[in-house]
Image 1 (cartoon, rainbow, N blue to C red):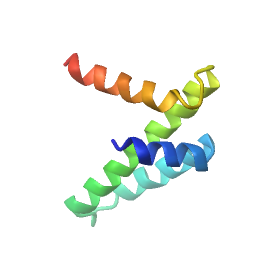
Image 2: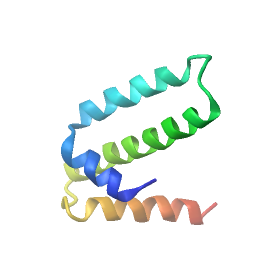
Image 3: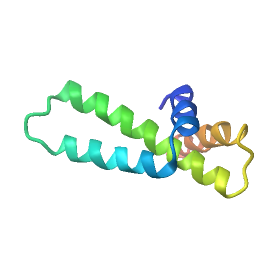
Length: 83
């Protein structure tokens, strides 16, 4: 998860565009010729895209646009700490 990439994706793409991109990348990973290195890159991209979608949802729920990415990052880090 890279917060700068999440911020960039959220600011420059609609939630629908991000969701469609995730679907395409998920479909890409189902092809039998995908190598482990490619899968790692695609996995990182999907993680950041899903983070951007979550930030869009937080903003729609009333979280200020400047605070939403940091709150998202804190939520993710908090869930990691609990495990």
